[in-house]
Length: 420
Image 1: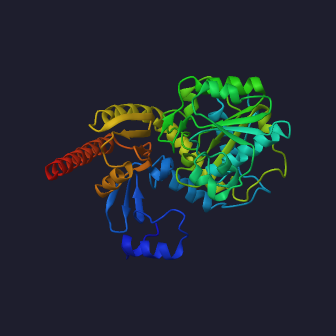
Image 2: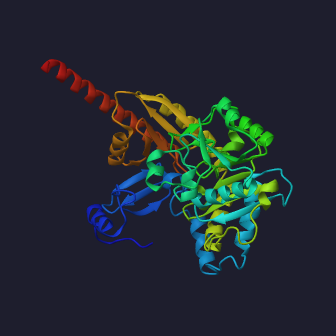
Image 3: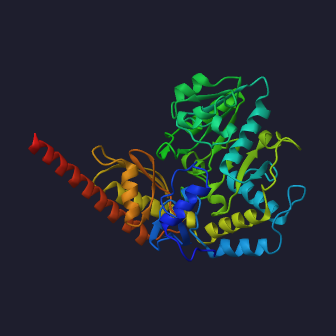
């Protein structure tokens, strides 16, 4: 592994500021090494990684199966473009067809392989446009949705701060309240090409859609002749304790298109749009493409991830640890609720506590990496191999951090009362 032998977080941060576009702000740390669920920064401080690159490193860092698969593939064949196919590409497509749409006839589903979740959602949007044509110009998305930052995916993303600097965006997208079945029926009609949704809205604070909503969405889209697109970029590949979150939250629902990325490659960039039925045949030669999509190295990594999840029983492990951990976290004073499923959890913080970003910063000082998608929510999306001990250590540390914050706020209030 290439690792700097000299330099601190501060020194590398200065070089970052001088060389890298300021699209992400200043990096919190410069990380130089990882193993399992732990990473080390340039100051040689170790952290338990409970974010996993935002739900990406599902097998942790430097997992032997991924390292071996990538090493073998890159030493054999690294890139060929899509003028050619490779065994890894074909094998992965076959795996994804059966994982995403279990029980459907062989050959009824097809995969477009890309490099990211944003690209997967771009492909899904183009499928929707091919389905709709001029007769169905409308695409529905949910309020608080996040589907990516390229222009097409950004048009599907709700947050105004992300959208407004780049308007006008591709047209025809309308947002409806998440989880509101009446609003869904009111918006749906014969001029709708597709509805896209996340089973659990990650950037909204890890909020699952209400029970029954995905089923209602399938019924409404089918009745209107529209496609149902489910964005499993963050929630797929075992993250919730099932291969797909919609398998867990809405068993029996078969969408038309499912998008994947993040955990699919275990840290190697890859995305996929998987379509079934008529939607699988809507994109023809020349209508979509990517130079790097489906490259054999990324596909080999994804195949290793799938095999390891199966062989190590990580779906069951994720479900069991997720439930136990959520129960423990919900009992921490200052925690209002724990949302999500499996090892994708949003920890709600009570009023009167510091903002979640401040809490996350203090947790990092104490050796735990999390993030704050909302001012009142911490997001946990650790590797699926996380140990019980690491989960319990975090719970104990969060308990201490919130207790200290509450005591500090109470002391400040007492001081202010005395001064008055």
